[in-house]
Length: 503
Image 1 (cartoon, helix red, strand yellow):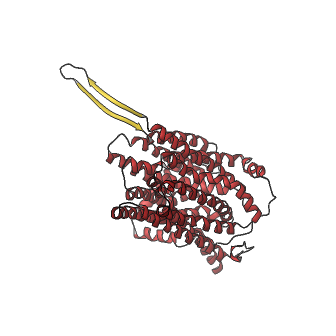
Image 2 (cartoon, one colour):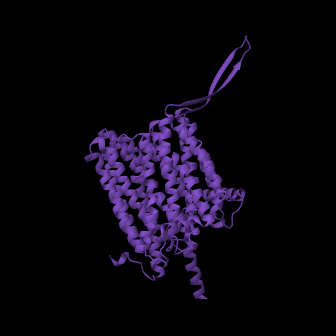
Image 3 (tube, helix red, strand yellow):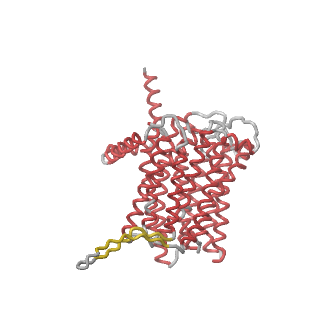
């Protein structure tokens, strides 16, 4: 095995800074690969191949279901103790699967295209489970704790910016290709090949991140691996909340593109444009939520953002009632405000899980968390796919009637107040499951939790500050400075050290 994939006992501060910078590049290229291969492109490609609602549910379940491999991967990580090697090799092979996916519409006969696509997705996600388990444990020991919130907020911002750009360009490319050639098969082949190349660039960046040795730990059986984090009551409460969150969001998530394509009759430019809107909302508000998280704590952010997301989700079952333009406005509102909420949930939940897992012994905790979330998120889209096919036969209308029975001036007005059919029921059920996730969040504890009103007030203050800053030249300059180094705290530490040396 090459020496540059091995752990090193000690490394200099310069190597740590280089590693953090490479992690930023990996986040950007990895998100570009994700944008090209998964998300709306994956669902739209499946629909193009002829996938039913149940197949769409299965596609949404494959990724989370692969997280069940996290438990055996824990033993692989513990036995090899080569987290960097496992991450780099498994990521390279997994991302090579997209080269084969690109060939599906070109070389596979039509009756076998959907099954071939599902098989390649299963291989990709199975290898990605190895990548995720080894990577998360590795990075837990690389990123300093006092920089964790700000560093990961910056990483998410860079990744989201890169993914937003390529998503929109890819969507426009699909529509232009389809307009010129009559179908989009060739466009998807090019997009998946570009996704593979982006993934390779991310692997190269990961290979330059140093790996400290794993802490020596006793070899445990599978029951010990599961029982150790399960016995931590607060961590168990956190994992139960994240499992409920994953079930509720994955129950409806795979069907957003389906609804926009089939019900709202939007082309891929619109679908990806709305996805980009959500990503831009993420991009702008990662920094906002990161500041609030640093000032208070992660649980306080979750208390505000989780209910915010599920309130936004209620817009979807209401889209079938108004006209097309009003429904489109609702879709825009969901992607904007839902993106703001998911930015806070993603950042706060990731930080809370990492901080709750012990340094040097995080692998069982992170694997247990991934297992629970994987099971919940894999069951949800399958059940939702069955529900979507079932509810295609049902139609519920609520009409408000206004009548005047005066014989001289009779009047009867019927106003449709609510009209639910098909996927509308799926979105409504997703909201109901979201209420249970909010209930599970109440059991999570973190030191420093503050009331909702304080967090809301701070959020609006941050939004006001954000608007004021970006409207000035100085504000634009501060954004550039934010991206110029792995962490602002690191810059402040170096400045303070220089001042001490001068004195």
